[in-house]
Image 1 (tube, rainbow, N blue to C red):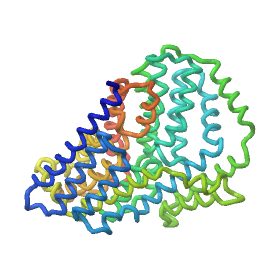
Image 2 (cartoon, rainbow, N blue to C red; image 1 turned 90 degrees about the vertical axis):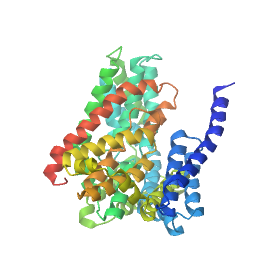
Image 3 (cartoon, rainbow, N blue to C red; image 1 turned 45 degrees about the vertical axis):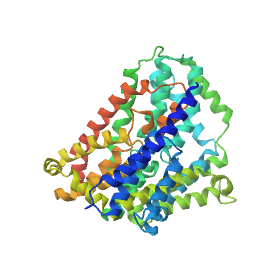
Image 4 (tube, rainbow, N blue to C red; image 1 turned 180 degrees about the vertical axis):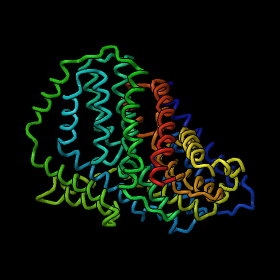
Length: 471
């Protein structure tokens, strides 16, 4: 029997098992818990299992989640579809359209070849270049999966140019640089990752605290600047390259640059428009425009006949499954909140020692980072992680009598990072889909990267956030 057929049979058996678990959660919860809360919790557990086990397509799981909330009356129709009225959803849609428009020009390739031509003479330099390229792309390609997908062909061509044999450390380095570099690329740019957008939206809607693009950037800048060299260091120490110098590679990159020719008018317009977009995002505290409005402005500029770089028909060809996942994920968060499920969970987990820990700022940050990292290993979908853990952290913070905003922010930020398991983040999945790297090869560098990220987050909180008055 083929492996694929065996996996299919296992999946067919697992689907009814998840249905039994759903029913068990629904019926086993105390009757003192309101029906709406029980349904919301059972639907959440069901969605987490289906997403984690990938038994059915992600988008189908999202639709099923909305259907169950409606049919079992966990929340009114307006709440079940509230996620689709959220500005966060349209920010993601606009981001996907922007990414498509930018990808229609050679701009991303030009930047990649230029950086590699400068520091691409050694294996360690090439790994650093790949990581840095992803950080630069974060400003004008607002999706981690898209950034990883765009850079992966470059990494694969480097595998061939550098004769990186199967099973070699060099091959592992090139591929993991794309995965791990993609994971950290959303750290400081609010619009660069769906998890950031959901975090800001939930903090705004549930706590009434608005975090601007500039605030997110300022709060996370030291962590981002530290993660780039540290992730690079972890990779090259975990997998030392067999060959260190590639003098011919710089010349090859310069050749590719020459093949692109001089910078085209479309590239210059794209750079100007994206530069303007980032500037307007940064100035949000002064003009008050929601980031979604700025993103829509960018779409208009990039697709406007005469001045744009791509036709509008081209950019609307986006992944509708992503929209369904985000919309129903946000709706699930609202249903959990309005049904009383979060209050119940907060009461359930609010042990006295936890409340005491949360009353000490640094211990609270440490607790949230560690819990979120562990939780994210089980709940691999970033959006689901953010939607389900932020309300719980918020409820605990309120019960402890402390400001919930920095703790919710920390949980959302930590949810971005997933290095150990392939399914934790989309860059990992994109790289693993090549079939050139295994789950086992993620484990050791992933463990070190997780430890480093945890320590750095706590350190930034103890210094930078405290100096800014954020905690």
